[in-house]
Image (tube, rainbow, N blue to C red; front, top):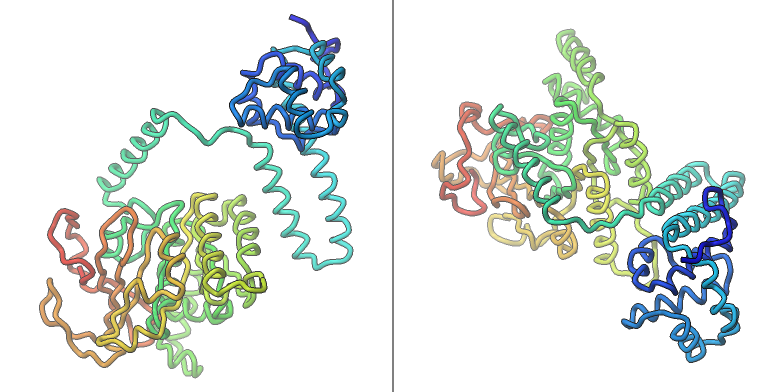
Length: 471
């Protein structure tokens, strides 16, 4: 076998790397499929070499072997062969053939390409640092880091079913061990019945919590966030609706049990202050991070979450709420397309970092035009994309708010609706669609199980429950 006339133990000039790689592909066309995962035409610095590689790629796409003759013929039929160095140049490439080192050539070319791209982007960032907002520059820098990591990671996403099954069995064993210890499989919601239905929030899940105004979306979010943090999961909250101080006030009220009215009107007693101090001490120790910016987009949230996640400061994300997330203003772009973009980016973020993302959303007004005002999946604003991307959709409903005093419950019989919140799991990709009953205080700052005496009752998924009724 002819060997390339250079020392492959040292860095080879880029152009010779390119020639050696092309020579290997021409001499042994079967190498193409493996090397094509590493190399593309844009990696070549020599335009002639790039044209030859493009020809090899096109021939392979059509199912043809890419030897010297077919490459020259292809180039003559599709472009000026002189742009590829001419027939003589293609023929002389064989002198560089070194099949054993072909992968090394490809990797060296990819590394040099990444270096060039990073250099150009850093030059742009220098200008941005001098002229633009610092936050935008930091966001751009994070995007660059992500793109470099993605470029360096050239491993195939295809795995043999044996490996996937092994991971699935390990996950099943982990879940079994957690249940045996009386633990929630995922991140606990802090509500017993809801944990039974969902087994907690899990990595890669997009959870949409939706309801009409005054149904308790923010209260539910804060309860979920506090429960996760108390179990050691770092929480990131993007509060677009409430300021960070308002959010902290609600958490203090819920944790201390102080009357919301007394707190708002600054009429606390000494005992109230003592309870607030204790609540402040307890909450201050929790791993909760709040971004109270009123105007952010998913690009900002993603960049921020990735940074916090790398520091071990983000294990679950809450976004309050979807309707306030900014999107790029593109002429002719409908609101439905904007919502689709938000929900898709939220799902990709959950999957990329393997953490749950909880996205709050409003329901359409049509809910209030029907009898009973009970929400359904169809009531989600621009529901198609949200319903498609979400792994779980939880619809919130307070019958008392709509003047319904009592209702029939399949387990408790006729019940009062005072202080009752229903969390209807209307969609669950990997589980049942049931409804959890929850109690709340008058100010909706505190949520609790509907009946604490039932906490030890095991949930039987094989039991016959009517769909979408309180469990």
